[in-house]
Length: 222
Image (cartoon, rainbow, N blue to C red; front, side):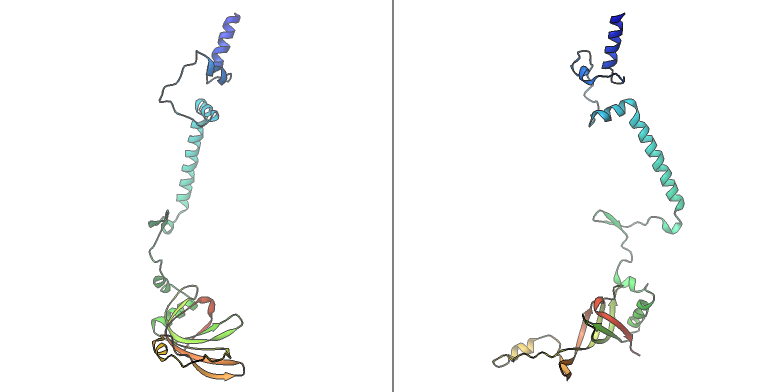
């Protein structure tokens, strides 16, 4: 009777499905049957026990059911205009490139940007007041060629007027270099007037790119 009980206990300690399974005893026992070469390999004993007890299968079925319910709920909440849109995959992300440029966005602008787009379409000159760190720097009268939502402006046929402190520097010695002056492509700056320590300058520029952080006010010239 004692031998039968010991044999039963021994069999349970070698049975991986039993709660009395002893892995160390099974490792050194001659009665342990080795698995075939096609047996799956698990990362740890806990995962192996979960597979043998059927716990992993129940978890998978539960996750599939939950994901299916979530997918059904999300599809029910979508209206026709919110369906996924096909796009181009760039850098691991899918992006819709249709209408994603400055020219197309200018046509859909409203409010002040819409007025600016109208001035650009009908070729109306505008006066853009620019600023510096302390206040108004001057203004630019020009035609608008392009713009964006950050008020960055591309201007054409620009007439710029601005003020600055009078620079009192000693003139350079020697005769002026006439060849260098002829080849200089920079617009000619003209001093309009001088008041105490400040001077007003003006120049004409064919094209000008003005950053939005320098724009203070834009006025439509009638």
